[in-house]
Picture (tube, helix red, strand yellow):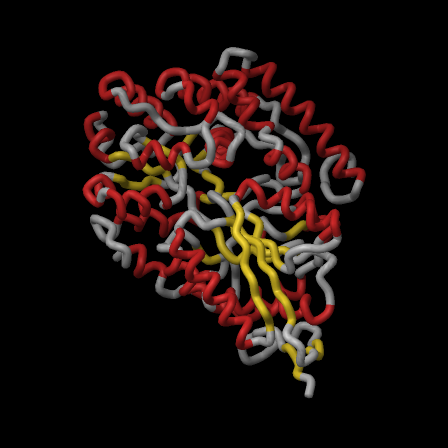
Length: 441
């Protein structure tokens, strides 16, 4: 007796091409990053196996570091075989030609759960192709994390609210207390996010809303000069060789006064030294001349490679939608690290941020994250997270541009001009494939 797979919907609705499943168990393999909160992986792996048992699937889950995901997806697409579902941490727009369109899944989720945050919409949808190349189910806020006792001595007990206050307070703390700021300038995730946040705050960007390269602007040049001075006056040379875990480790050890990161270091410190954790506080994105912006730390974006077919494809889509309906468990088991793309799926979130179920001292320490959608943007803002801007992100073009100025190797004007010229060449290649707008189009 065959049974039909119907993708989960609420009461009404939209059924995604039903497919008859054979009685044989279908293998579903999932590859995703090793979560920064270990509790989450323990929960997810068990939930996925249980889901498989209820849906005629044998589910296996593999975990790798965030940095290994792009190469893993590329290798699977090239080989034409591999994992059924791969969860990316950044918009995988550059892989669109090797992925199943997931318009149907995104439409079903919208019908079931309502509006999603713009931050999530932009990280899995390519407007020029009118294609959802992935399904973004969650994102991770990137507030400023600071040692309150140090900033109180600098006259800023509530932490910095502007880039200028970050510089002034950070310089005081460095010169008088010997503790540096912790914004990276190396080819890694956190450094990429910090440099972009400063450029946006000055009114610069890689591209405009129409996908034209606009990097070489007075605003970008001023932001680069500021960030270089920030490094020279408030940080050590160690930031040029940081890995993604360096700022976390420095904050946990009490060796950094401020970092731009998720709440993962704080969660780790709660378990190591509750008294030190109580001294960690959070601020939203820092304001500059053009406003306050910070990219999300990472996103959780499921993609399905084109080689997946038949029953396996339909079950993979069902898995995505069923996982989305259980997002209260996702957020809770990530210890409030993951945030939902569909706010309606986690009605408890505001209450949890007001009174942290994981023992923040004070209990409302995380309330600042209630405003995250006011200041959190995405890679490629104010344009789209297109293949060209994601290539530049993956190649560390922006952070290398800023680092070369901080190291005294180039002037800000020369570094920005060179990066702009390279960006133009990358955009031209992707425009020729019809996947990036702007230009003469």
